[in-house]
Image 1 (cartoon, rainbow, N blue to C red):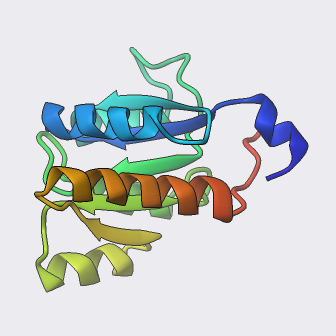
Image 2: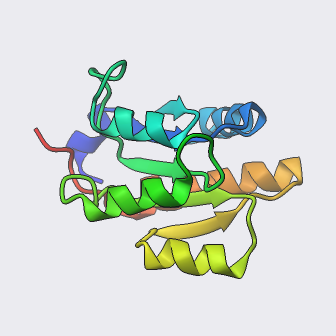
Length: 150
């Protein structure tokens, strides 16, 4: 990251319908080393509304990274991933699939839709924290993310 990156929070969009997973992710990121703002939407339609800044998200920031569950109400996470990765204005945003599915067909489909990585949510609480912190460490400190458009 450059010095100018340190002047703003990293914007994270979490697309997740499970309030427990949202709470655990918030806790894990709160204790992290990176200044971040976690934005949460509960379904695929709301995710696209956020990304395209449609009501009620007209003032939404462009996320630096997206944490995407696959099994969502209204619009499936796979469909959301497909829209993101086929839109020239969104495709450079890294998408981390964070889901309970361990099905090989889900893993393959996510990568075929150009997911940046696929992580299966652990059921163990401490392991969940470790996974979220590992995602934070890799995507927010190791990887150089593109600067947001001006």
